[in-house]
Image 1: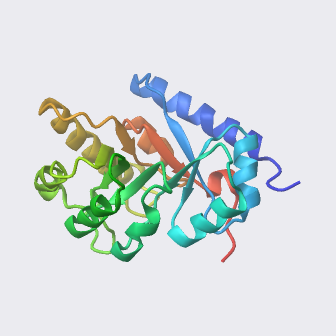
Image 2: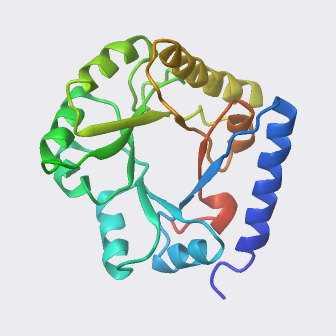
Image 3: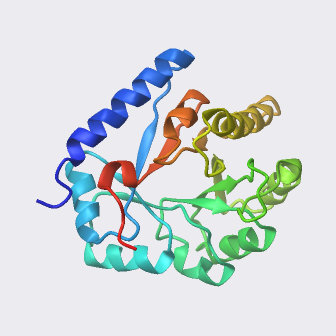
Length: 228
């Protein structure tokens, strides 16, 4: 059976989420995006069978191949990886949520590609880690970027996303995630509703939950190690 043990691993993840929320005094729903990159369409089917209805992919082409192989499947496809401007046309309308909008040029191209009368849901990626190799808007530039997005009603801004440094140091993880929460809180105080905080992956999701994540992007902890 493909991905045997997925249900028990998912149960363990949900238990950890609940435990972290109790410790932090949080009660909001935390949703899981099942990251199926580098796995075949069978991973998507396994996720759905386990009760996960949101599927995350890093690359547009890989996601489109799976969508074509699994037509009309009742899952919401999320694009969680970096999106190149020349792939914007292919991404619009094919993903329920694009997590990684971080450049004016990309936002402009996405907005241009949205059919009239429709909207594309997005998150703004913020580089809370301050690492040059990571994508994302610098925290100091977030307000200006959000003001630019206001010019594009075709883009439905739902929240923020970030990636923590690759480290086992929980205090470093939490500092990064807390920064995103603080940025969102500041936006809320300015009457800008940003309900979603996409933060936390297999190696750091407990820290993300503790700092207020609403959406986790989980692959390895659910499906095991990916193919090289």
